Amino acid sequence: MNQWERVTAGDFSKSTRKRLPICFCIDASGSMMAPTSSQKTRMQELNEAFGKFMGAMKTNEDVAASADISIVTFGGEPEILQPFAPIKDMIVPEIRPVQYSVTPLGEAIQVGLKLLEVRKDAYKKRGMKYFQPWLVVFTDGEPEGPNAAENMEIAIRQTTELERNNKLVVFNIGIGSDVNFDILKRLSVKREKAISVDETNLDGLFNFLGASSDSIVNNSDNTDILYGKETVAKGEEIDISEWTI
Image (tube, rainbow, N blue to C red; front, top):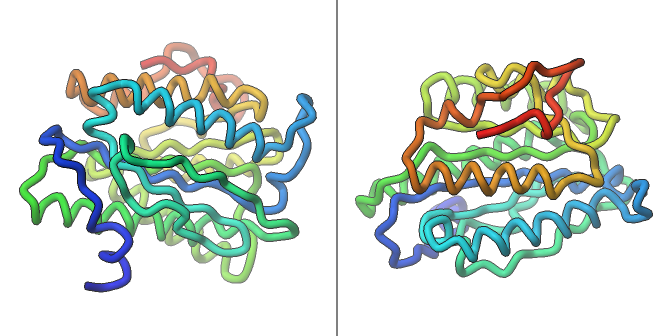
């Protein structure tokens, strides 16, 4: 068994439901320690909203029986904080930012895609059906570090190829006003703009993700619905308040 299989292939629930694998790639660089208008840091806001989101997902019986979650953080270097596991069995880990660290965004996305690939292979070996995997990327900045630009281009090529072939759903999310949205939006060819969210309104974003997961696992909707929006975006990104499912 290789290193990827050790962290992704095991830990399957006995549910016979079609699976929805979701990999969260979450910025844990030093900038996530910046204070917000609520006097909390960006990471504190994210941890609180993420914890509530996971709790709500667990109480939704259909989603809890389908969703498998992994978490990759990136602050200085990518780290697999949570290997793939059924959401109903997970204890939500606290995400801690790494002070004075850079943002290896492209490298983390590549790790996330590898986790999803190995998870899909494990489903296939077990004869398990699954929905299009989700890659949910959160960042409050732009790629930084050695070979950051090259690794980001690799990540962009990988995500857009998978997306074009209907093998991946991408949520490219920028937190706050310091995000390089020009780079972030290139992760998707189906989403017209990257998703922008205020650091003090992360609950709204996670409500959207929760409603989206419920819609997919209960209705088997075409995942293209997750790229739709009700109103025209203003500026260079799409505010989460403009999205609907």
